[in-house]
Length: 124
Image (cartoon, rainbow, N blue to C red; front, side, top):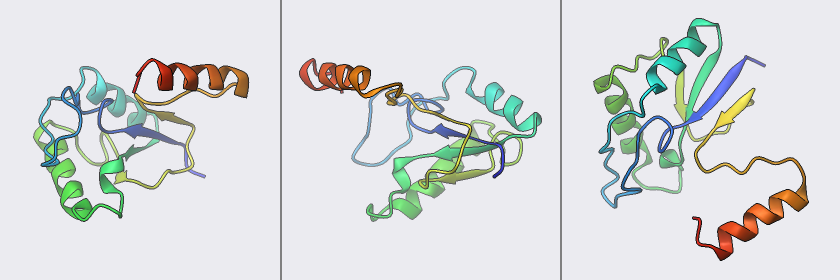
């Protein structure tokens, strides 16, 4: 297994301030610090996989979305091999998954409390 970090695209690299747009546009700038953090991981010998639901094969425009992401990355000075190694929707075996929508699991009692809050307080 390679030493990999999987980093979500929307909300972690791309600011995503308006959420999903029907057009699939990638409209925001990078989140400050993303480029530097990713370059630091790569320079330390880690693999960096950009993980995104935009490439779900159930979506007809998944191939176009990948082109949009790669174009956006280049326009915002993220270089393959310097900041990341792949863009995928397949969850790789990784040291950690960096995601703005994650629920950290420690036990089911705590997780159920978080899920209850999300469902009942509209935190989604």
